[in-house]
Length: 72
Image 1 (tube, rainbow, N blue to C red):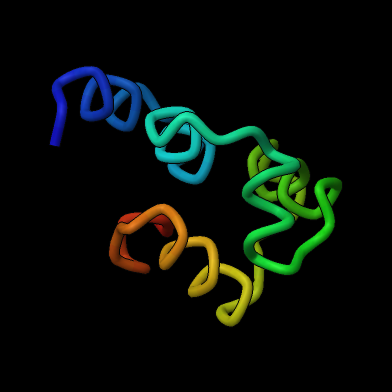
Image 2 (cartoon, rainbow, N blue to C red):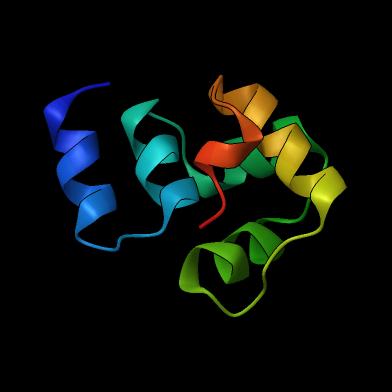
């Protein structure tokens, strides 16, 4: 795991956003690949929604991380 990712995660940044940006994806691209709305992904990243297990599994698969890497 790159140090920049670790630093952001330790600082409390949202893990979905950190991993999405690390993978070079926009919210729209991640949402499309996960069959979610861009606004739903944005709400997860802002902490306004927790995200359902199914949605987080799809996001984790696309970001090639474990589901545990996306939840606190």
